[in-house]
Length: 543
Image (tube, rainbow, N blue to C red; front, side):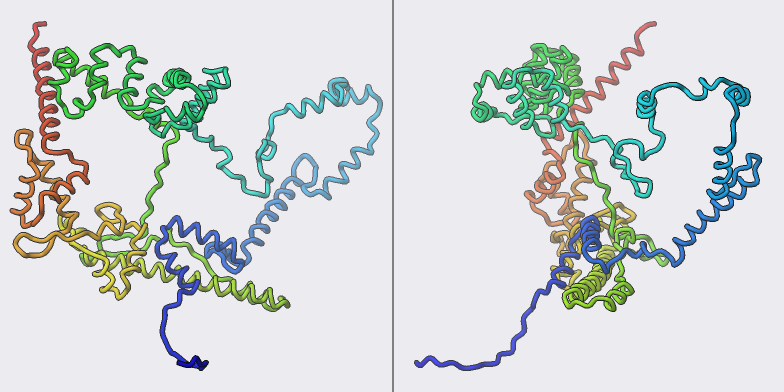
């Protein structure tokens, strides 16, 4: 077969991801906070972009300047008509000042008689250095005289006055510098402090710490014993039992019975009071008091230092009842950045720019600014369209509650609004909807379907979870529902579900097993009965 060269024309279609298209896709999945940050960066980068609310009406600045100017002139006229005889303006005051300076004041006696005091009281003989020192020691009278202040023409930053939040590591490091003087011990202590997590705990195995520091295990344990006496009580513990033991020693309540209780916290978690009473060797009243003391302790002593701040969740969409019985869906305008393209500035620049490179730069800037404005508008329209369809599909939820939540997937919404599933997935990411039943993430309304026992309409997984929680909340202490019993009751309600699915949903909602719930409710019932009997006995005692 001979190898030859030839020209061929082929026609094909392919999707090309342009930078503008990639940017539009990226904007869809950004949250309102991330979108604000992105727009702020574009405003700094692109000179043709400006905020919509930054454009002041024409003549506003001159009007303000004229207002201050009018105020000063009227004030000067008022002063010139006063009894002091000084003019309001600088020109009116200067002749009087020169006249006073050129006037012959007379002899020392005449001056003292005029001032009704001695010149020594008026003109002090204090040296210039002392006067300068007094001026330096004087308290500042204006904000700009304080350190860190900005000039009068600039806005100062209020965050400069906010005290920094003290973290747990900083709090422990301050105590470390006082507790130890030897450099080796301080190094070991600082290394251990760096290992403390936000709850105040150290890792269980500190053998690697001694190996990395080149110290003996005894040295590390000795420093650790001192660290465990730091504030807050219970810090630098390696497990929950040690944390509670440290706090009990601080309260002088770590006796042998309490020690046995702390060492068997697993039985306390299971509410096995009978076994705990035998191990501790106490009666019912004493074990109840000991458990009460354990509950008053802090299992996470480090959480009050440097804990993560909770960000307020700002909804992107509002859903309100309409006058016609439907639902009104609208975007939250506060989360939508408003930017405009400054066409006037571009027109002025295009007339003055002569270099081809500068023209190309501003042409690209105009194109990017125009595309960003269109992309933000398209993003808002897409979010509104998807949210409106979700409200239409889940009308029962908004009207009657979680029990009427329907199974819904991305494909159903995408087909209804004629968009791709990936677009709907990006729109529902990191977006929130404020409704009459609370604020929910848009992905909350997309739930899996569970078949009906009688072959009817499928049930939403979230609605089934709600049904399971209602059954468990309404159970009696003497008749705790097992997972099998819950399955039978759900099937009687028309929900075909397996036992393992019930167990998975129950664990996801952090609901304990039937055995643990029986112990908890019986213990709570016993505490109520004992309290009632003790109150009754006190009331029946003779006065």
